[in-house]
Image (tube, rainbow, N blue to C red; front, side, top):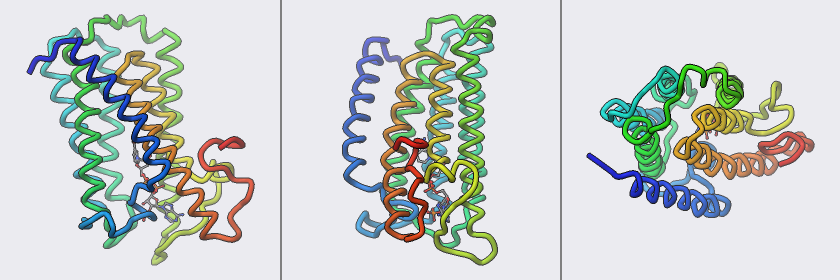
Length: 255
Ligand code: NDP
């Protein structure tokens, strides 16, 4: 498959334009999974299986296009690839097993929409690094401020994301089911530090790679997760009278 750079770039701008539209929609319509699951979105499927099936395509598509193209790949490019694969290997193979949600369901439609997103995201990033990238990332890129700041953001975002997901998942220790007020760590400041962590992580990746497709992924992550954090925050406030009033949704002290 060959796509010329101009067609690719036009497609990428359309993809980013779609992100803006989806953002406006998600500010009005709650994504119906997790606590917001509803049967109005059609048939449901097993939650764990859903996570596995919907996140796997991005690993496959990104890797396929990354390795089949003949763009020059220096060590920094393999580092970009490795970090992406590290995150998604955890998301696909480990995260679903950590969930404490026996018999929990999600709408099949959510899994299909996520597969759609992951196919395009995997394509745009994989095709770029595999086929179209002409920039030579010399070893000296490791000392460039983009890389240094980017990898620090990536690592701290990943830590915040995973540690906060763990804290949430452990709220259902033992036989506990349902939802509880999370406390400790960044939960003292915001309702969804796990989602903020994911945004920081992909912002760091975009910074260290410093090219348009990686910024499109950062944009889409914000589009998916900022409205979700706002929905979670309102849900907590509605469902827990004692919910800390000084806690924000996703940005400490601000939002
Ligand atoms: P949530 O914060 O909604 O839930 C995370 C897990 O914790 C779920 O298993 C949830 O259970 C459980 N949980 C959450 N709050 C509570 C609570 N108060 N009491 C008890 N259990 C709780 O995160 P998401 O499901 O939206 O996302 C999961 C991961 O996927 C995150 O790391 C997120 O960053 C990432 N993600 C990334 C996207 C991207 O575009 N890059 C898009 C979507 C997600 P339950 O499912 O039963 O609600």
